[in-house]
Length: 166
Image (tube, rainbow, N blue to C red; front, side, top):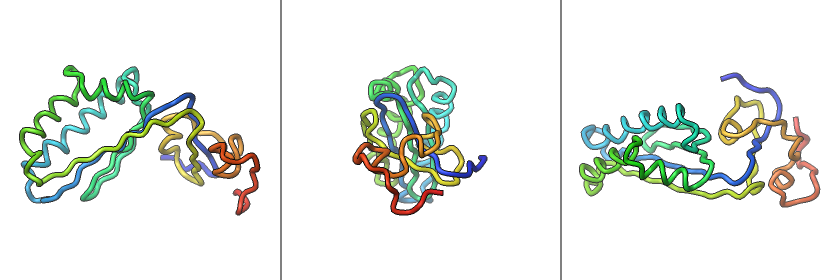
């Protein structure tokens, strides 16, 4: 990923949804319990990448004992439809997980969902590749939306940074 020198922010039109999801390997050596969960996600992400009309704007993931996948969605209805549609690759793996491992305690799963209203978010990226919300929306120079977090999120009409921006 190419590093973009300077300060940038994210710009996305309208409301959107941030969906955080992951799993935790409570007993890492018990592969039979967590491997089906772990191998289902790449298939789902491939479908979402190939079909932007489903409403997923972008995602990024990190791996460790507790995994994290951040997804940006156009709206909650799109996310919910993806989760429930029997013809898409989420519902059946979710059912399989519930049958095989939900009550075992060997693998934990979690998610958090946030609705974000237009203009009620803030982001800054300094000397970073296009990342996060900026990859899901538009990657724009930070000064276009404000030099401070308070200005970018609309909490202040002044735009005097505590430290000179680079």
